[in-house]
Length: 507
Image (cartoon, rainbow, N blue to C red; front, side):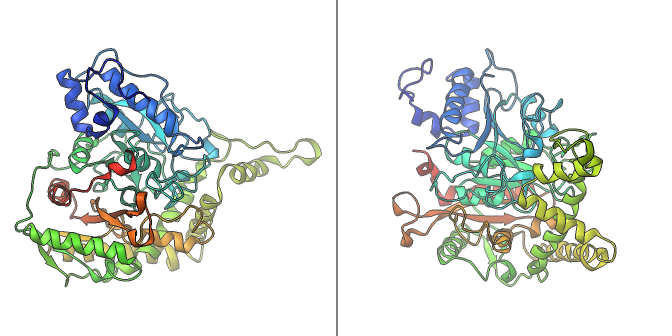
């Protein structure tokens, strides 16, 4: 790519454009300092060149717009800004494949509410991002379109299932993006890619048009380079929707955070979510961030308890597969998506044979594994022993959080116990892969909002990362239901103090 793009004026380089936050890009377009067409084409060409499954690409996009740059800018809070959208969201006339062969080249006739609201605010659809199939995975290696690569180290995973969106933002292939979080699928890849990822309160954003994994857990949210951008995208997406009975919106308008201190803020560090299996470098970055929070005036309480949080992972991997087995029953080869061809004549296997062949050919191994787990948990004689018990654990976890928030304002933990691991390192060990969600699953089980912000690098002692400087670490902050504005203020103050520069991933 040239150092200068035509139409942007003298002195504006690619690096200048990359350093613009999403909000700054919107402001530049609104003021006329930057053309919306030039901004869109800049990111579109980068996404097409570096986001595909080429030799040096990240494979973070499954589809990139061929055009779509506006001739004139419409009004709106996001007017003129390109946005990358996870493949799990339906977008009218555009491939919406959920990372699966089952929906290969499926082009829905309607657009998901969350995406439609971004477009109504003036955003432009830049592309669809790669993901774990039907959002089932923690590494973005379970996609029918191949694994996504981490821009910090292309031999490592970006996290999942929204790893395509996270990698695109971290690599400067999109100014911002949206993903979905069921058990940590926004926050964990945000941590592994060194960006911000927000999972809102359950029901804050409509799920209509979001291809379902686990309906009582799924929630859309933003992936951005800074907290202010996350607030801007969130503000555009929230709200009730008559097409989704579980959508409730937020009780107050989302505001752009500006806080720079944490005076009077009480942060709880539960032993149940800050102890075992944490890499030493991750632990050091987490502890350093706690010290920084105290320096900003926060009170850190290490006595807060979440006694049932340790059971969160087991409960999640009963409840989520159970809901998935029900939601994915619709993919049978009859109504839409893949239909496997079966033999005819004397060897005709009939309707059941078509069902079986379609689901075998259409679903990958991880999706089949979770469907079988969920179907077993819901089967006669096992429902109370597994699904019913997991629901009771879920209630206890929610009650634990409610009691904890009587003593502290927010719960803080590492987002992930380790930095990005190597591609293929855990694909043959499902339980080890599932452990990546240990710190993130309790929040969606309780329906709570949570955000991950980058808090430093770890692994320099092992020579990891660009120049041996280490790989990103995430710091997770969780709050009570509908506390998004306060949560964003605290995250903003911390991020401003930390001053983490993720530009090494794309410069």
